Amino acid sequence: MRNKFSIILLLAVSFAIPNALASDSDRTAGDGNSATAAAVSTSNKSESTLNNHRPGIAFKTSLLGFGADVAIPTTRRSNVRLGFAAFNYGRGFAKDGVTYSGRLNLRSMQALYDFFPLGGGFHLSPGVMMYSGNQLTGNATVPGGQMVSFGGADYVSDPSNPLKGSGKLQFSKAGPMFLLGFGNLARRNEGHFGMTFDIGAVYQGVPHTTLNFTGGACDPIGINCRDVSSDPTVQSNILSEQAKINHSASPLRFYPVISFGFGYKF
Image (cartoon, rainbow, N blue to C red; front, side):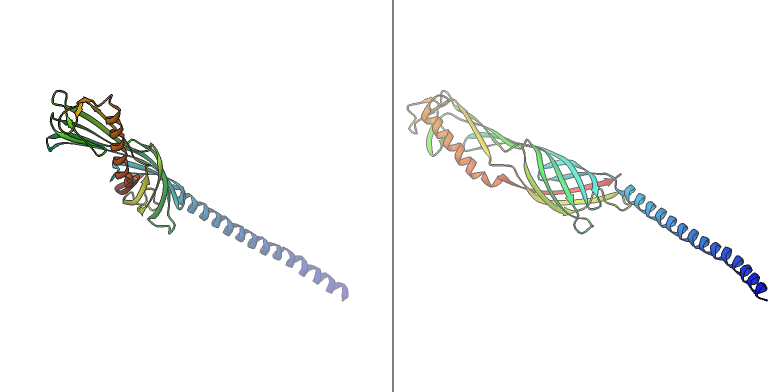
């Protein structure tokens, strides 16, 4: 009887062990399939996210002129943006008998780091103006007998050799800048078109003025005429006039930037 019971027990165990092993194998296979599916899903999601990280371009108009920006995504919440802008404007006019002509030339290249703290379109953009060719130039012709002032000293243009002058107002060739605004040229959604807006300022340094005059200048009563290019007193007064212009233009060291753009993401 005892031998029969042992045989039956061994048979039961022999049947139970393979069934248990098969069950464990099925569970392990199921867990492996779930892990594989999760990994594939994560991989597909990452691939989709990476595919949406594409560069964008925008054409813009701003107080720096007309130009374009290119944005390249670096992280999920940041881009590197490179841009340029240019503008020319010239005008001539006459006042009190003096003929003036002026020209504004704007040329600049910018590099910005766009950070999107909220994950949407709002961005903070510190950067640098890598190159600035912004300047204002002008020319003037003073008819003979016309009064003119240099550094607070009055002169009369020599009738036989009228005064002619040229001037240039320039700024630093590079400087820091900071912008904030809305819009993302390299946004992560599936859309291709969008608008951008930026507002901020660039520090372009203390303005530097250069004045050059040729011709003759006389005392206010029309006597003692001399060549302004070689007379030390007149040259000293011209330097004083340059300093006055630099002081008056000093607020322009912080140049405002307001920009609107229409962008396309590749």
